[in-house]
Length: 144
Image 1: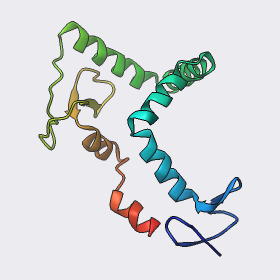
Image 2 (image 1 turned 30 degrees about the vertical axis):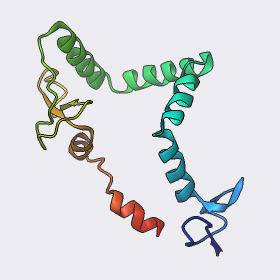
Image 3 (image 1 turned 60 degrees about the vertical axis):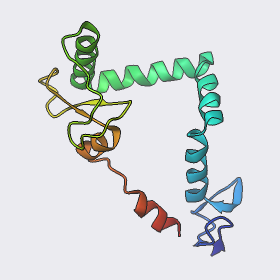
Image 4 (image 1 turned 45 degrees about the vertical axis):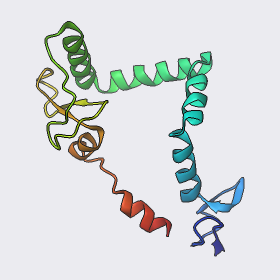
């Protein structure tokens, strides 16, 4: 076992560390990268990275694959986007579930066969509705 210099947790040197960095465990590196991505500098670096032709092509390729894999979801998202643009749907500034004001409200489809039947949710309520909610306390407990 090897101790991570960040979290001081004993970790398996073969599975819990990247080959290029044997001082900090994978969980600590991921947390650091996530925190950096939220800073203004991290956002600027990502914005510049996404402007490169190779990155644009990769993002477009992934979008085409997703659209082909989930055509019903693609059509529903596209229909909502057009309806909001045309004024047929009004995007609120509050989450329908927790009633909190949020700058990025998502349209959640319970049934993709009804594309304009959406619930307007904040990102955290949307993750919960999709079953992808992450409990931050569990992450911190795993790291300590």
